[in-house]
Amino acid sequence: MDPANQRAQHRSALGLSRELQQDRTDHPSSPSRGGSRGYPLWFRLRVLDAVHTVGVEQASEQYGVSAASIYRWQGRVTPYRMTGGEERADLVGYDLLLLAIVVTIFPCATLDEMATFILANGGDVYSNEQISERLKELQITRKRCAKEAYDAFSERTQRRVRWFMTLPPPLGVYRVLMQRLIDIDETGFYLKSCSSNYGRGLICERVRNPSHYIRNALRVNVILAIEPGDPRLPAIVDGSIENPRRWMKITLQNIDQHVFADFLDETCTDVENNPVNNGLDDDRIFMWDNLTAHKTALVINTVEGRVSNNNFQTMNRPPYHPKLAPIEYVFCELACELSRRARRDWDTARLQQEIAVIIGQLGRNGKFWNTFRHCGYPFT
View (tube, rainbow, N blue to C red):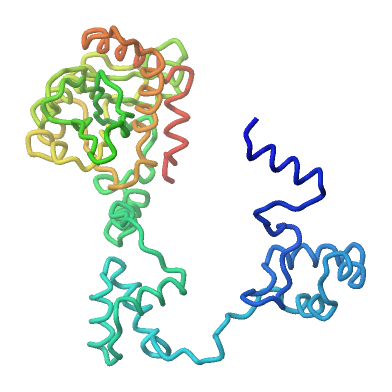
């Protein structure tokens, strides 16, 4: 047995306390002791709960708290800020207002820039330590900036969202039948694990490892287009809700405007050559995100400038709003099922084969239709 444990057992048998005395959390020390900052908030709330059950006098005796303190807590349980008997002299009044303004307008400003802003607008001169301490008291902390979140809620993006939901084509899909829509996007898959963010090494050295995603790494790229299906078609017909169509291109090439335009040409040709009886193949709208390769003259002309009896249109979804993209949910299902099936002995050919098999099984029995409805379509 450890000698420390033997010593502790002997002291316990003699009725002695522990050598390193620790305060019991259930009964904090009295505020009358020097250095105390008063009873903690959780203890005050516990005493007030006991008051509702056994009364003030019994709770005072049970927890060792004066009745006067309990009556005071019933009126105000949160303690006042401890000022030390002196008024605050720095960063108050107008200067504090300037500090709040600079944090609101320029959240990425440094302490030096905040001090400069306060001075330039008629405030006093403050050190970085004073500003940092005041921000800490105001519970304003330093954290990573979310640039995507800022762009997603910017006035320009929100205007695009309103147009997309409230205007007809080409600015939006307002009152467009859901079965006319075809959602398109691309993704990529690597034959390796991307969860190795930690490693081991000597205490005096860093652990260096190649990046997960590099341009020359072997990757299987997938372009996928899906439709929700047409509720007017019988269940056994391709293009119905139970059997919605999907178009895919699985390649090892990097996806640029030429590859994307070829895929669109194949999709439009398939729609033209294999029309669905009583369907809406003669008037379709392709939706995609704001990737540069989607908005080139070659891509737009491939869809809207083709000589066809059908009417094909293109539509850019609002940026930073994947909730409006049904294809994103389908890609999540694809990635989840692919990671479940993946084995260490796979090569790129097997990966491509499995991707094709999984995509062929997705969306059956109204799942694509429900995904479009989940994203809010149709907007009426």
